[in-house]
Length: 293
Image (tube, rainbow, N blue to C red; front, side, top):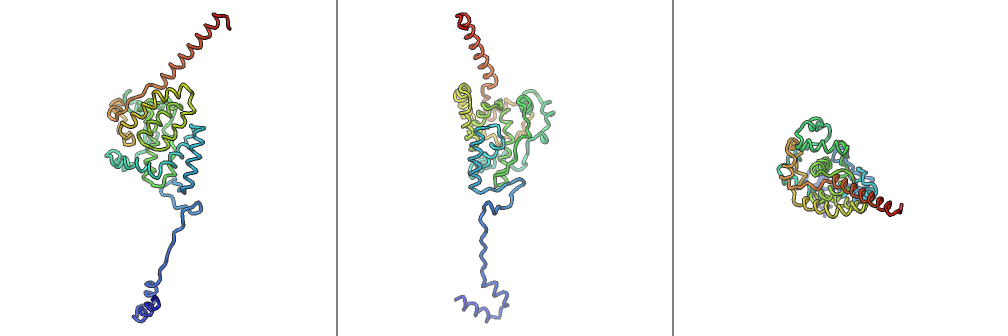
């Protein structure tokens, strides 16, 4: 049939080049994405990974960050490796469905010491969001410049969403008053999980096994119920345009978002240490009076 078609075309007097183009089919098979054939990056710093590589990254970073929860690079890698294919898109869609979230996605603001003047924040009223934020940074001895750049999420817009979440993390700390030591981080991760549903925040709760018995008891009795209740009932914190809220009263923002500030963790730990010290001293005095020591 093909031979007859070619003869018919040749007899038609059409140019030979046109006949060749019409009767020749070229099939192009794209090379499969593998470690030996990576696509070009979708944005600056992007590192495309295969599914197998992402799985390995997720498992490895989860295990090692459990042993060392202060390895921010491992926690960042875990967050990116487990955010796709569903959860980061859900968070992006939550921003797209909110007017403020859409503006954030359009403007792409970044949070660092280059974009926010720490001196200006210190000059704001005492109960303002900005003053509360910089006061928390000073008290905890941390900087807004310590957040790793996203590199393992393929979609460029979703990569920004993850970057925004990451850079706003300390503002969530300031809003809730939770400190950066392990007990405070786990409590905030529980809140973030209930609010954002990012798997990494939920997986971080496994670190509760590394807490001391008194801390673990306090987490389950006080901070986990607070985190679940407030994380679920409050508005999506990813949609807060923090740069526009810095001069606002922090308590009015908590009310608008539906977030109740938890019990002061530093204060409760201080009282617990004082109680245990008093009990120890009382026990020693009791032993002395009985002639045991």
